[in-house]
View 1 (cartoon, rainbow, N blue to C red):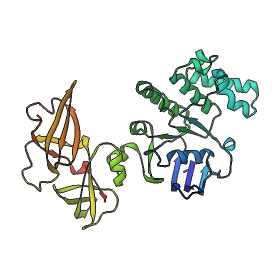
View 2 (tube, rainbow, N blue to C red; view 1 turned 120 degrees about the horizontal axis):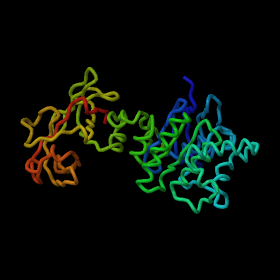
View 3 (tube, helix red, strand yellow; view 1 turned 180 degrees about the horizontal axis):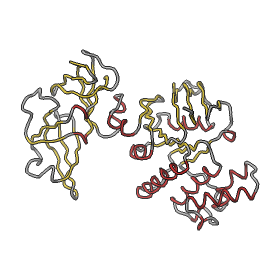
View 4 (tube, rainbow, N blue to C red; view 1 turned 135 degrees about the vertical axis):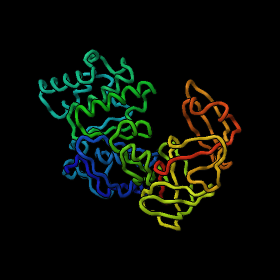
Length: 362
């Protein structure tokens, strides 16, 4: 399979010895939408800047469509970068902002204008082509930055939190446009974000980073339902996590003895009998029933007590204490959680299917 982008053991260490990125391996297929996701300071933007050529790599190899680009300056790489600030020229019209990259490349005026006209039409910007950026909304400026990046026809479009400055409603609208545009054009996108919902809804695969290292690379649903490390289990979604000792592991499943009983799930990774492990359960997979478990060791059934209950529209929001120290937030339709059974102070049993839980090494 040919790859648009390959990172092979790419690393970045600063002069003071600080390791920003270590041992980064990634292969991106043509037309993929890849998201880099992680907390602030995890190395995702540094990695994007190394791909773009704005940051020199300390080790490893970066290939774009088979060509090593380690020593190529940004202007000679087949990439375009869109930043959160948009970096538009305030004294230029929309048309000139979009065409500036083609002008720098020395493209003939007629060809340049034709390309700009096509991208203006594709992004619905014809009506504002002669305006300047200071007279436009945030959403319009974001589209201009996107058009400027796409008009040079890059092999890879790099996006560094491009939606971070937009309000929630506009952000959702632009997300939909961005995904549709990427599908239509078939260009490889590498997208940096700290917003989980953005990564989960837009990308084909997500690279979760933590302290300069890759924790997991998976499609969104797999990442959400089958975390492979403790960090991912805590960082992605709303998971209930139990730690204990493996009492049995076979045929891809494992049973873990915890302070709340023996719990089971599907294994992701390597766990062995007698070792420490964690059972990770997405909050969406949990069912509630009134009363306490019939046995303290009943499979995948743990006791809880309601500490908060609120109805918002047709949704009931419940907070439960599991063992006096941990609290879990749950949501469901009011028909599922009626008032009389789920009032504050009520004792409940939380249960889930073993197939919905993931067992990982602790």
